[in-house]
Image (cartoon, rainbow, N blue to C red):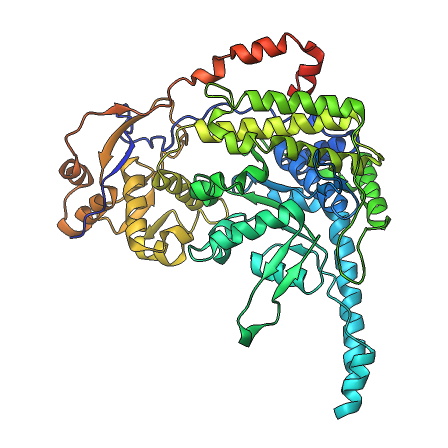
Length: 561
């Protein structure tokens, strides 16, 4: 028998031996999403989307910002305090939300006009290509070649990518594309796809960072596959990624992604699920989102921006928009924000644990402010746009800090939580009330395809009484399934969950006997996250500096007004 490496997991409560026990430790409270910081037109659209979709406001807000960034990235540059030509206003955005939290529907409403424009452009492109090829096919030999030389096929107008990797996006840029938006509600495809495999991820990360910073793309292929090799300058790439926490848990703790500056470039939030609170009434279902004036005004502004000129050089495909300058008030607001986030990176500072993220906050605020100003139709970035941007970026830092400081449970517990949610999903619950472990391995989520991980997760779900089994082969969901996913108090102990399943199946012992056989004599230690001393600490430096600033200035970017 092959024993799994010993793992450490929270100890389930013994207050009720038959009731399922929480799998995950408690999580720190999140900061409310600052929807009021969005410019009025964008804020009202986000509120309307959240209302009609019955989705977290964080999801709606991020989607609206993502759509605005797509529209702005070829029309304005963000100001850089050292570069005369500024920098792209493209944004990288990451939103964590559970399955069923309606990510796709939020994105659909926010990107409605963008999607429609893309659909029309690609339909027209297909028609033109078909016409040219039909005429060419009526000719032969040299005449056909001459005709195609005189009537070259138009470039593919595609700018949106969902099920993609970095390679085809880079290839399209090198072949002449000017901009792209890589947006997906299955963010695990980015972190878990071929782009981030061990042998390519360093190159992919470097390529994405260069694309974000300056719009530079480079790709080198072998001589036998030279198509798509080359370089491209001054392109634009935005990323709007929405993902389930379980699909990104490992990646977000990856030192390479964090310390090399890839994740610190993302505007981040983790949405709180509304599942269980989304009841419908006859009055509610009679309301139509497309008739709401807030969304109609937002879509109208989106159409206006799409009809306005994009600053693209036809011969090279380079994007060369004007730089939106800062007003004096915007400069002061940015300096307050920049200096505050810089001070909070000291050893006892609020952002000491996320220095790579806080170190990029000033640049990110300028990009967000440029997007806000562009969507609002401003010719400059005023104080209001900058203050709003700083508030959003500070919220993102607080989310990164919360995500970094909370005690991250072992990946197996996160996957076990996701697995029981998958089994109990209303769309498949009838089929999976009872099942054979082999059936789960064949038809379950990807992370249970390997036998070792499947048995480990099944062992955990048995141990915590979410699943019941007599023989370790056939399983059924515990009928007492009114269970919280998060524990109020958590203790840790060593277990060998997969081996428990095997002993039940192979030796005919009961689950309790197998668990006892696997118990390791070790002290049970409290694994609850200790009280965070940073949350209650006010650094002397910050306090001294704050006394030199007006309370209204500080409150503006902190969102306290």
